[in-house]
Image (cartoon, rainbow, N blue to C red):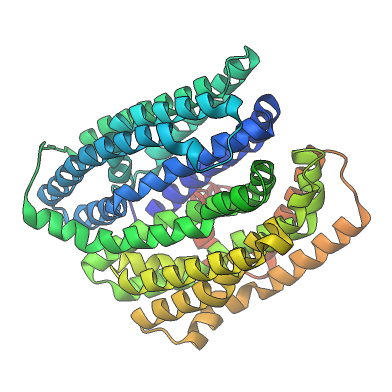
Length: 509
């Protein structure tokens, strides 16, 4: 399969995966909040946030697995793939055990640090016990998700994830519909994740003919892995402060109910992160293969075209949401969440930049440049937390939104872009001309059309809101394809979409 065909297939299935995830969680989130209540759901969010912090025990190994499996697969070196996977699996078994012990400790002492209603103390402990038990299997088996991605089989990952999501949604309806509560739902969620990881193991073993050794304790392999992953790990630590420390700060200085209110704004921007990763993930593994082949011209071409196409998809979504966030929130979660609207608008703003520079940032990881991005990430995290703490008492949850957005606009986006362009020996003027300039008419049209529609039409439900937003988006991209793209770009888009053959058959008649 050609490079562009591989990228196209992976992007299509990744988008399908993310769309399914967004659609299911979009409707599942307000349902669970209504069924469990704001206080209980706030407790659930804090527990899952703590569980997410233990994800730091990964030390960036998953990213290393994806990168090196992709790189060695491109070189045709299955022995190296076996070494990477075996060492990573052995490490993850240890991490799963440590994580389980830590989570059990949290089940005992968590209520001493947060204002938990006495009626919910037992609930918190039960949730942590479930998380502890599942980590013993989730950690070791999750390594095969990275293996599947490294093998550029995003189609397999998409199918497995969609099945898990659908079963999760069905299970939530059954659990809450029968009054069983959030502990059983969390248990179901963890069980489904484990089942999905087992499927990844079976598939990756068949495709790559893995011969996993356990325990695998070769020192040189571990040094090689951690030489890359340690910097990714430290960057993830900064990322947690950027996106997840907010729940703790809001829970401590404001209230647990405010955590849920902020979660509405956070989840909206998280949908943008989902779209962003869906488009940006597949080219990253291809760029890793190019790095192994020293195809630097190919990387530059991938940067220009990837940025142009990705931002053409991403930025219009952000612009449309900026104009429609008020009816979106009101019809999505209902009354009582009006305070989420302004924070959502503020958070959304940084995606105008991040949605454009993400391909450049991803290229850094593909090239193995991880130290400098770590420093940038730390600067963003510190700035974000300091701004939030300085303003939280006067502005409430709005302070956290301001800190998050400014950290990206002032630090993350410009510094990562500069570093990426320098690594590829690309002048900024060339980047702007080849990757950004051609999309400006699209952005202006989307903004104008969104303003006119939102000013003269008030949707009556979440469905009409989504339909109106979708219509603006599709019309804009259709006109962009017809009026702005040249013939070569149109052909590439058709190949990425997998419809070039159909198009040729239709036009030849």
